[in-house]
Amino acid sequence: MAETHQALIYRHIAWLYQLRRQLLEPTAWEHVSQPGLYGQDAQQKRQTIGLGLFGEDLTQEQLHRYLAPAEREALPAYHNAAAQLLDQQSQQVARLRKAGCVGDVEHMALQGILNEFYEHQGKAERIKKTPFPRQFASVGFMMVCIFIAMLPFGLFAEFSKLGDHGLWVAIPLVVLISWVYVVMELVGDYSENPFEGLSNDVPMLALSRSIEIDLLQQLGKTDLPAPIQPVAHVLL
Image (cartoon, rainbow, N blue to C red; front, side, top):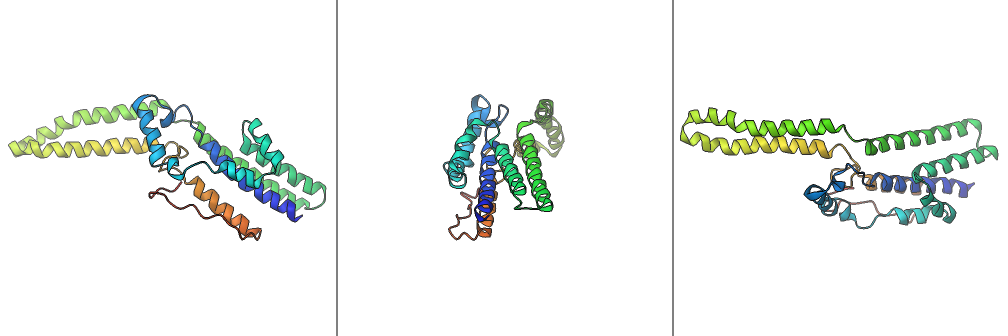
């Protein structure tokens, strides 16, 4: 029974890292997938202030540590390996119920928890794979450009009333206001997807490691991995 308990815990840890890997896979509409300078800039940010700061992906190492060889080798054949790991958890819980190791109440509680994991994974995948309507992003960007183009005409007319020096004061003010609106547009654009591997993303690696440490301590393990620390003030 202790081995089964450990297997369930280990498989859950593997699920965390596998789900993180799947959520980090670039989609066609993400910044890193765009052509030209826009995509190159996003790829550079991903390396300098994103995933590149933390070196190689830890997922394969964790799968090798926490999954049995047969389970690990079968994962690449599945389109959604994380969901497959949850299905294996459900099957093992069902086998425990059939063997009489857990009662009906415990079985229903465990299956309910697994259903919640399915639901949370589905929510994260919908955020990842469902882009905002392009008209929302395009119209917003066009409105910002129109506002910035018209802004000098309004401010220059008012500042010219202050005299010749008024126009020179208006120039840095126009630049500052334009910069604020451009930054707001970029923040909204990059906030659409919190699973892109950039510095403002959800720190999935740190969260997975924290849960991993907690679960291993519950098993009585003493050889614990170190918590994920920020690198260059970035936590992923």
